[in-house]
Image (cartoon, rainbow, N blue to C red; front, side, top):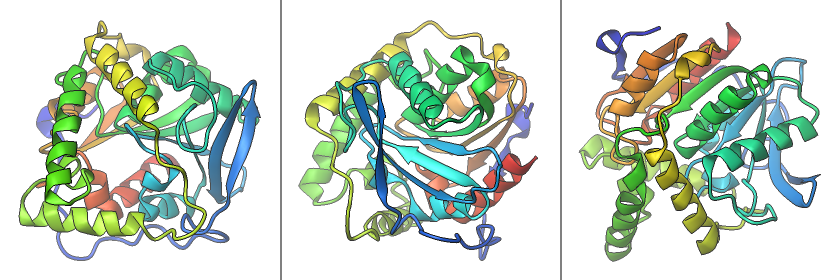
Length: 302
């Protein structure tokens, strides 16, 4: 385990190692959206990358996210070496059903989707709320999970998680008045480097011009806020039960899920390594996407 005192504080400057090659076949910009019925729910998902018998990588999304909120550079970077699948949570985007209002239910839904796809074991990459879902899955169904990447996230009962709604809604309001996307404030610092990184990230999110996903509905967003509040007020879990290797990543100035949560995760998970990106916020992995993909590919290949 990486001690918080010895955390890898990353501050890449200049060119970084390329993201592991090129995707063969469709890219995140062009890959078709499919649907999979699991009981009464039809899940919207996208699937791409290397179908070479390796362990699939399942992407678990953040608060209010739909498929088009994943950074194309990260998805394509992972797909250059791995079989990658992202899906909309129940009742979110193009997925049907009543939106879940607990992290536990979201974890059960994710496990049901994975099993319906026929996978016996997967790697999980959870960002923000998705990282909470991943933790719950690893505790509930450890045999289903080989490795995990937890980015911009925190444990049950973690610092500031129960008040995410206040931070998110405040930035939603100020972004509206400023004529900007709220993610510019929520995911990135207000330093010159953070602002530029946010602008580049938002531009990448618009690269897919056709067959885009539906935006999250208001009631689904409210349900997710309820889930985050309950998760933040929940009694801390015994994370020592999670034996899988875990890569924990965040920026050094995360306002949404405060960065001390990442240090806490790395300390409590028995087989974790930690990377903290300098001059970065909640979206540190998007700001330093090339470095993150390089680290993620190395971690997943071990």
